[in-house]
Amino acid sequence: MRTNLLRLVASAWILLFSLPVVAADSTVTGTLVEIGCANVPFGKGTAACMVRCAKRGEPIGIRTDEGTYTITGDWAFQNEEQLARLMTKEVRAIGEVTGMTIVITSMEPAE
Image (cartoon, rainbow, N blue to C red):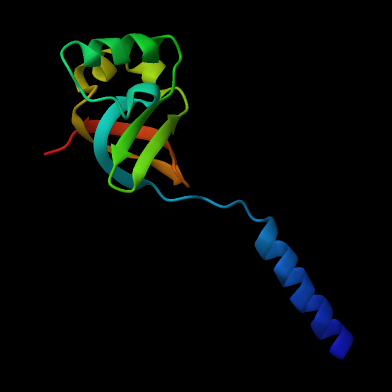
């Protein structure tokens, strides 16, 4: 009886940990930046420079009070017009957050 109970508990744990983890979408609000320029004071033309760097594949992110979330995935390549319009502006991004990275599903100006 005891052996069967142990087997049942062990099987339940194995099943529990083998299920895929589905992360819920989170919202990150902050300034859209090109990571290399994240700490450079914003001046005239900086947004255009950041967009050029982002189009070359340089990492982009969202600078918040907690730090800068790196945007992963292909959002920047699929949304070049929106990227150019929102660079250096306050944004609200929704996506899967893991640590300080985010895979964006949608982004809009923060209000």
